[in-house]
Image 1: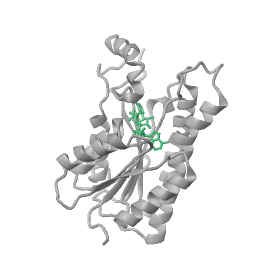
Image 2 (image 1 turned 120 degrees about the vertical axis):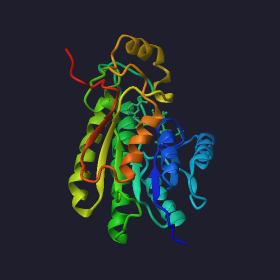
Image 3 (image 1 turned 45 degrees about the vertical axis):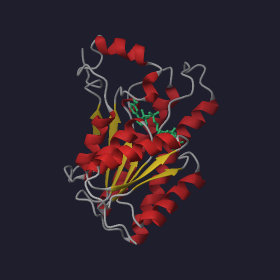
Length: 264
Ligand SMILES: NC(=O)c1ccc[n+]([C@@H]2O[C@H](COP(=O)([O-])OP(=O)(O)OC[C@H]3O[C@@H](n4cnc5c(N)ncnc54)[C@H](OP(=O)(O)O)[C@@H]3O)[C@@H](O)[C@H]2O)c1
């Protein structure tokens, strides 16, 4: 039976920002596919949290394991989503990784470069391609007030250079162009595309450098003087999917407490 509620496909929804996004999507009354790569237990916890927020009994939350860095698994993810729900109304490209080891750019390995770019850049680009092909083939009419949407979670690292994780910065700078390209291609099709750029966010990704960032925060590095939370991103996505940005396709939205403000 085809789903009568909007369906949101969120990559990397088992933990961190993806979990925050999933909960706001649940609050909005949508069903969701919660993708993860290895942490099935965390994905199950996200489902439980979504159930607490859901506003209608018909909403369904399904976890699907798939490595965004694998063409075959991306294909399976979209196929299983369509089998399960019969539709997709929005794709949130959130899954991402940092380098396993932060190393100075003079020591960066090609293996780390390939791994980070495969997950953060090639993965979301080609996953978007699969979803868009499905939309164009099915002539999908959105059930969302904001229309069909693709959202890319990039980073302030698309612009800010960190010489000890250059591969991450390169991947996010590339992802920013991926978002622009899809916005240019899709806006005329009634599909809106957004790039969200989080700053320093409290998730597992930053847990290893918490002390360093705590110190930077206490010294005013972030004008709003706090860590970003998953819900800061969840709220922005809820606003987009609710239709509060109807004339803004191609926009970059900073969710960074002002860290990218040019200051003297
Ligand atoms: N945290 C920050 O300060 C920050 C700042 C700016 C931008 N971002 C971006 O925000 C996004 C989410 O980051 P986060 O901080 O929430 O990270 P996180 O806490 O480390 O969570 C990463 C999520 O991505 C999933 N994932 C990792 N590799 C994957 C793959 N190959 N295929 C599918 N899923 C995969 C993980 O699944 P498992 O649980 O199965 O491992 C997990 O759900 C990333 O794109 C990141 O670059 C983060």
